[in-house]
Length: 511
Image (tube, rainbow, N blue to C red):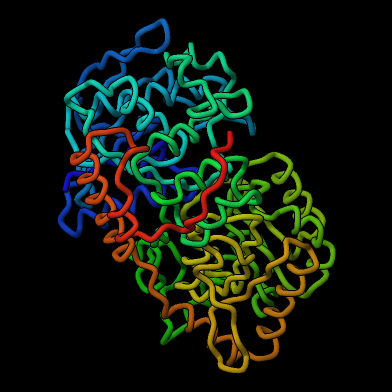
């Protein structure tokens, strides 16, 4: 099968979050099973080019025309990479915005990107299915079913759309419709209007052929008011074509037995190298070596309200009164950057933060920390807790989304389990579960080692998930080609057999 991935970021070329990891690993896994896979990304600053595939495409953008090119990025790990090249839109300091604020022309940037993706199919490489990711690619299914609905070259292309995070929707003022050349007929509650704004994610939910999200639990959660971010009614209406497929991880990259970015390699059979990694982590973050025998907590994260940092703020004095050390890596919302810097100044011997996206440091934290902390308000899947399992770094997480799907609570009676979880979104609940983990680390080293090895034995590789996606692509292709009618009239039975819906309950269409 020929599969085109359309996404706004992907390693090794661009990254702000877990989406980039998925866009590297899932295409590679599909290619390894015999599929022909291309990935289309924006060409950001410093993205390399192998050759020019198309010097310029003609893209309508409201009342104007734009002429982005398509750059051939070559083949890496069996996957062919291409880039939409428009320096005015994409040659910028950051991917989506600076100083904690989005670029004001993000709607125009990613409208052009979506149109360029469809033109890419016509002029460079025609896939059997398009797999779009998050709101930045959300206009692809909208355009295919409206503006391109009578274009014989692409009208039969099926679209699978993956929701990586419902909290990011691509919502813009009403005048955006004119700026990006969408008809007023799409600015309705049945299409893209959402409380007076144009919503790219809502359009994708309605016009995509099949929808996925990145864990089974999150597929259920986004159909509720608590986690649906206002679109839960829309998701419930599409529940019979929604499924949750757990993200995998790439153990060729995230494996302490092979990792070239850490101070020493180690395995579940011989954990001695982990202490070397801990020593190195303390050195890199400038913390004293007297912390070597104390529990070391690590965090690698985008700094956003979603991630539970308000809970850490609530318990920080009590947590840092404990005999422990913490290393934190990430960037994002300025208030959390400021908060972590202030903790570093207040507790210089036991708390250190680096404000950055740094892949090498991320590996060092995964290898050197004893505990990995993810107290997220919500977490569609999460990858770092899965990395932590492989590195023998015991996760402490909130029981939500993919965190709940991937971490098994340690049971002292049986010795089974891979980490620690708390349910209520509450600072005291978080502090209690951290203290449970610290007590075992300090007082029961053999039990702690058992928890580590339990986690290191888990397999969350991409292969099983890639097979599920390939099956869904085939369902989408056959359904679209068989019916050649709008998505809302598709026969649902085949998807129901192959992918039971996360919920059969229907709700109001919502806004």
